[in-house]
Image 1 (cartoon, rainbow, N blue to C red):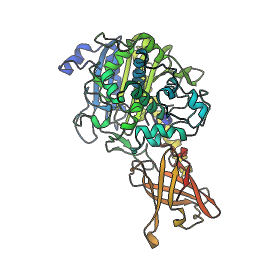
Image 2 (cartoon, rainbow, N blue to C red):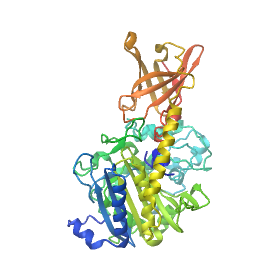
Image 3 (cartoon, one colour):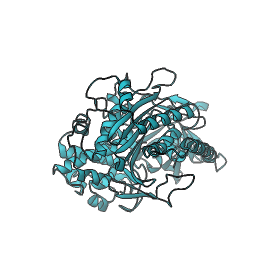
Image 4 (tube, rainbow, N blue to C red):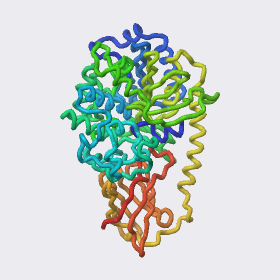
Length: 537
């Protein structure tokens, strides 16, 4: 979640100023350049190649001008409500560059430094290692090198838990450090929530007030909001996903309920925007902090600091015939990934929420960029555009990214079915649990998440266990024997990822449990594996 999901990883490895009302169709005809036209044509080809994709929003900046801001398809499957340049999509982790920019502005004002200890501004801030607590800087919050594992702590922000922003920051001291501090890359969301808390402490305003008054309002992004709950319902795209069978990520496309409960984690991924609005943000980034109206929001030095590589994320031998755009080296800056794309510097980021995935790609040397917003977890669509889009910014279309994405989709769906079959085959032959069901009931506690309650329900043959992740109403349902001391959930909300509970016994009593996702396609933000549940009653 909040970046391209694990489902995406298996499949693959925004516009004008809202200053005046005008006929958008006439505006598009007047402003479309060669690159905008090429991307428009390609987006239509992608939609035709993947007919299950409900809708799409695309923005192109070409040599410092917005030349395309357009919607494709429909907001909701089964309707004729068309997407256009004013349709609102969740852009998730594309918010992170905005949070970094807010910190950059505060640095310029002398209110903090990139390299201030976090504890200077958040005295109660703690990581699980006291040395890491002491050394952690504001910069470290933004560059994914803390030593936390991939998506650690995300169950505090997903799916729709009741944790507050303060709860999330307080929970950091209980998250285990799984790697070396500043010794490697692992993507996280919770530290961007902490970065939002730093912004609030330094500015005296909420993160929501800051992003509205310092970014959205100055750029005329009148339809862009910091929370799904604030989206104009008449213009929002509906989220969609494949919910199985046999697992999420496969099967027919379904409309999802709209999740508006993301405020606590908004600094990591709460922004919702339109193809028309997001172009203003892209123009300002490419102009090194200068807004389209000429007002400077941040300095050139700050822009270059945000674009500077800080953490190596990946490297390779470079392009191949099957992967002609493969980067030689990829790094993370401050809210941006930085890499080479066919000989040019590319800044990019993805975003993922339930039913929405997105991509921003900027080629600073050309003052050009592309933003893709989608209202489904249809990763071959995003993969086609995230590679074919930058190609077209460079004036090339010599590789068939649609065919490549279809091949990757087929290969990975086949592998997923194999992995899922293996994961759901009991290694112990489906042995019965060693204790009666009531022996597994009780309250279990994890220090960073909170409590999970397992209750005995029903009588006689109808007797069974019910599990409740107490701070996550969506994660409640049956807990049934699977294989010995391993039990499997069947959550009432079938849009959620089920989990295996493996119970540990001592002296004939259940003392603790470990948890992991059932599906190999589960988004990394279902970080069940980071829970260490100890029975407390």
